[in-house]
Image (cartoon, rainbow over all chains, first blue to last red; front, side, top):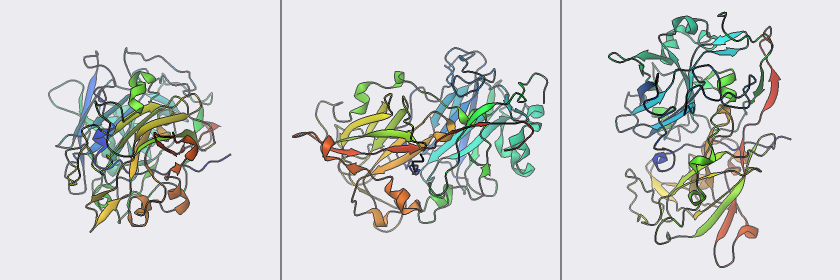
Length: 190
Length: 247
């Protein structure tokens, strides 16, 4: 039986009424040993920051496991207490989001393995459907070079998927999301 | 492949969530003005559905209390407007109910005003209505909210632009591939032909699937009217990845 699906519609400008959670940005509790922060701005075609976007992330735990029954290796209790794998953060007036999480492990996939990454959904007024991207890490050069998804991306655009280390702090990464324009982020059809 | 990486040679059996054709609106929809500033202009890159995509957050009931699904009882007085229930089922496109999944909603008040600092529509705020709700589907995928019917409101997309009355819905399903944010509309809204967001969905039949149904059987005498709306997420099929083939 096939039931036709419900279409997507935009979150509109007022998503802040319904979607943010006080603990949303924390995929692990603040202060968890080894926690990293990923911050960045969401920008439009003119480079103007979006004050009304929502960034969501989903990822494996540091051991490369998911606490989910559809992982064929079996659901695995998180390797760190309180790890949720999921974070969501609305952008502030300057277009900034910030999430706190643990570095994901590499994952097996058909014919190889995927480098550590987070799947990202961005929602905003002006987006009739979410847009999906991935965050990889600049300091995983070897794993990134073997990643089948990155391998399929125009080398000139790969950098839009790589979070860079922020100076002045261990475990602080920067990942901007440019929704449209010459240097727009690579977005995926999932 | 690094020696310590788990091997795919044994065959990872993963569900697959086939991409639907002709359901969702194109991101680049010129009639919706802000899409021209914000929607990607380059073609989306197909992403294989691997472990991160076929799993997803299973956010539990610890986030939700029973009171979160009734938007009319959280203040000393009741909100103004037409009291309604909105109920239905969450299914996947194979017809299977999606149990125990979080639904979040937000909406304008009966006058068409959102409780948000950016909303400058000169219509009254309602001190007894904040417009946000949550619930979990039950074991059969059913959900139910009690709220008031939102009003239509003007926006600045084009001259004399008005949004048809709607409630925003956010759903997770059980996999990253199933995540959906949409809007539920009310039957017979005279603004449908003029709304570029509603009409961004190219297929008229698909548009109709965003419209709830008035349900006399679920009305409560002397108390509330009722609308029903089923939400259908992407379905899944089992597939075995064979390492020597690229399926």
